Image (cartoon, rainbow, N blue to C red; front, side):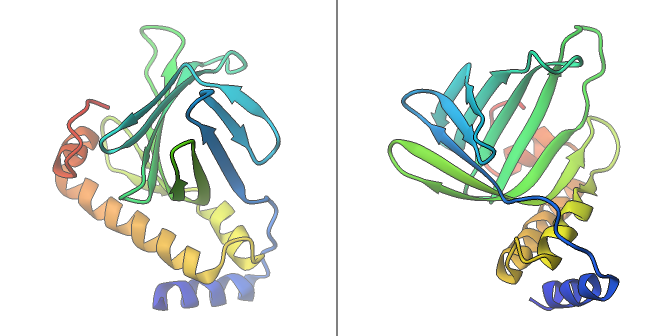
Length: 182
């Protein structure tokens, strides 16, 4: 809580203003559709409950570089793991993105609230904190409560430390009991 309080004080001191609404997705397991808070509804090519969470995949025809987006929801870790598959077979894929989220689930749907703080994890090289400017804007503007900000900071920093120790996303996932290949 100390980190969040100091963080919020610093944000208020520089006068940042929130610019984006909360990002909430609802995944309907039966219809394999994801509804965004913007109102957009997207069909999913893969929507499968796994022992570790939920596996999703959807085509991205509007993205010139990516053919599809693969997302894993890891509710016990408070994380969403996202990777874009490149359109061209020989293209270098971008980093994976781990984002702090709140996940609520029932038999029909999973609801995620994106806390706008995450990590970019390249295939080679160190992970780095990502989306911190959006996160700072959301905290200072009251879109993310201080308790949620504290949760996001703790989740992201714990994950960064663990990934740094394992030096590889798949090794970190295996350490967490997830043996599916990312």
